[in-house]
Length: 160
Image (cartoon, rainbow, N blue to C red; front, side, top):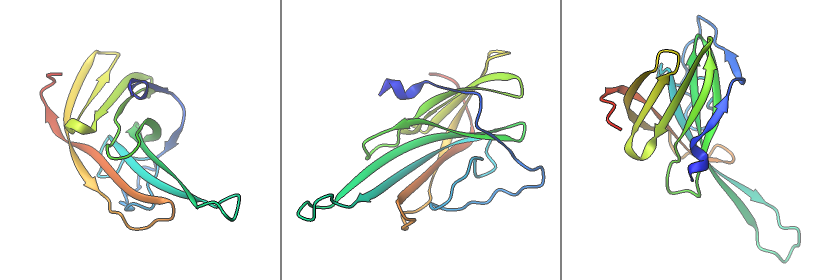
């Protein structure tokens, strides 16, 4: 859905302590800051929430959701913003426009082609990355049934 590809955020930041360590929490707990010492990543979460029937004769109902959030850490300030959703089966990507440390920027993640780019708007500098996919598992964490993190693995040519 093209509507998923444009998000704007300027708030939602969390100060990351200078002496903090990156903790890979697995599928159950994923915070505001990116994992794998990355400047940004995309976190995909698949959830299933059972809803009790309103009538005892009705079958049980489960509501499924599949969301993608971009997390960014810039100037030791972390933020996490939803950029996409899907009906399952695919990891949605998207773009995040935000300002951090007085610098406007855009981060776009394309999970289908395992690539991303970051544009620093003040100097019009675009850097492109290939992404590594980390499947954090499918152990039961309450409503969370699966989590995947995509993070930059290296720079690549910007040919898209």
